[in-house]
Image (cartoon, rainbow, N blue to C red; front, side, top):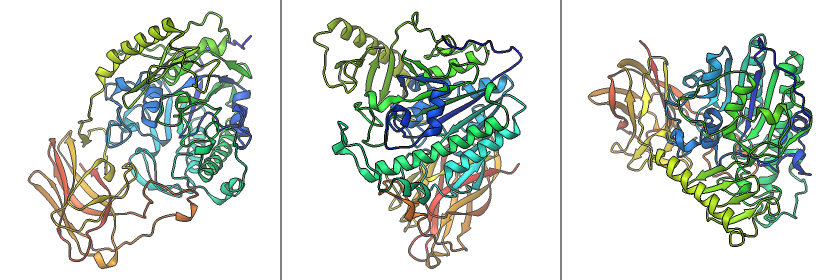
Length: 574
């Protein structure tokens, strides 16, 4: 029997939601991996509830949207992971919105990945405090360029350590009030950039060779992922020590989960699929929930659950009634956590969708994107299609899949055409990174992955960079460009255009930069290396209300190139 101590009416439990990036179900010791050391994360499982089959989306932004809204990501406008298509529609209500209205302090520390420009920004989605980055992956994990409540700042040390420091500080400052801390780490997502302290533990470690997909494993990538995972585990230990130090254990719900399957072929319980796949291995995540004195230690929960269940469950545990204006797809799993009785728990379907591929899961079966049916109890590797011998089950699941696609995919546009917002009345800072821009002429993006990219090869006055924007309210802004420029290219004259309004400036300060922390990469990256981009104020520009194209172009390039361009920041003055 589970522990079913009643929550005092006057007490609202604190909530800490830890989300890890690109870590697979199999990257933890508690799940049977003999090569990686995760004692602190394992303790979360053994001191609380551990879910057997918990499912998220195949990639980052969709999972984050489902956690925050309790709705399938296709309903909220999230159709991609970059260039604006990762944004949740503005009429979506997040768990932070609800908790904030119910007296909670709300802070997010880490990778947001659901919109950058306010009100898509975390501070527009219910969070009072934000420290981290709003794009997807980040290219430098050592004291990188970040933001704090809209202000551009420089991080302090290795990024997961820094995020944990900030979360602990926030907890210490708000320990006398109910708080919601969202801690989405950036690792072990690539680039596989690892400090020596952690890398040295794994650079020569043995790896499992019995996995079905071991022939496709890249050992150095796996070792780096394990090193990054042990660093996360160390930070979880620090966080848990702080909770104990501040005597918050019995009034704090702590959740640990990941955003998708592993970002490479490595030990994962022989499940089929990795990140970006709608098969079991691409979407199965650990979920550990600890609430000392309320949730039974070592509780093992077998009914399937999903990211869409997080919002209704946490609200239910907190005693908050929420009358949703839009239908929630998730359901509260409070009774599984506090009563530990699964005998009357009804079977259900959970849908997984990405890039025109849909799979559907019941407690026992999975119908994959090709409509092959698998008994997941007997065949977790999805090796034997049993659709021909189970035609009734297959047809019921196929009908449910088609019904979901007909109902939900109609809400997902084929292309994201929402402009980037500038000048919202409630926010002074407006970031327009290279990620969200289009380039013309010979200008090149530094990587095929836009999120942490910059523009280079700007050699002609006929080239330009543009953003499709909507200025919400007329105002005056200071325009700040983040750039690098070698000494031989100093002197470029360039211009920012908004309709007939023009602001000109000259690069009068050279600032060249090598790539940062190249020696800390343990496996060749596909993302851009970062540079030390610095800010330069162009001056003030008045932007009138309306939709249009904001354009940055060079008027004269006296030498080889104008600059390497990272971001335009427009800070409201009036």
